[in-house]
Length: 112
Image (cartoon, rainbow, N blue to C red):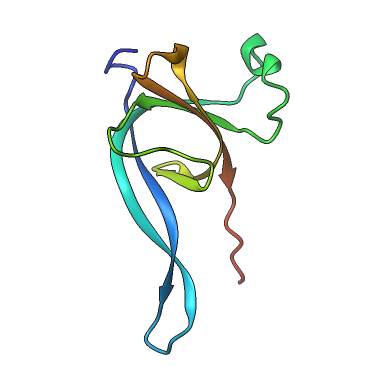
């Protein structure tokens, strides 16, 4: 994976409970890392067909392994294209250099 293909800047975020001034607890974002990543959206290729078990996955992200941070399915990825819930995390080829993440785009529900 070359840096030329890793042209999407992402934030890896964990959601933590935060109390507001009135004492109510709501979910807040804690940015764990900001890195460059390769992003591929779902399309009709043979590779995406083989990943049919992850029918909810809408995007694939690949980035260098971040020392000191274990990426899990409880985390969220945020980039310029939106917010993505992590569905699966895998070490590419078991070498410990790159992480591959399948993620589902989260649609925000806004009330008008």
